Length: 179
Image (tube, rainbow, N blue to C red; front, top):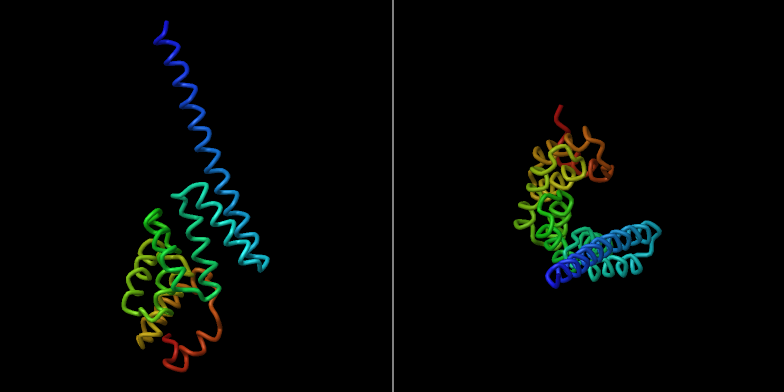
């Protein structure tokens, strides 16, 4: 009888613990959603607070780290963003945009050689993702490999990427678009 009571109490405690974990995940997801809403309205500081809240609620929640990195990048705080992108990748290695954005942050921080690997990994993970192809095209442009830049820009166009016309114009000045 005593063993049965201990089993029932243990089962109840474990189920409550599982519900608490599910609730923390749910709250972290909600905080991340709020973070993106604030960011889309131009309130980066409140967005960062929401992403931080999500990380406190669930320490291993990759979307919270990615959100923080993205906002920091948008504020041109690249040195601060890079560790958050790295943590996102550690937690979610198959997230191509974390790899791609890390590559851009490294590139624009002057780490061009180191930037290539995450950019290539992003394309390997999502070969038909227009945005990751644009970012790799940018790397090739910055490295003076204009034919490769056009190659990845073509894939980006075919997959509906948002491409700045100024980038296309700059690349066209360096090398005519191959036909």
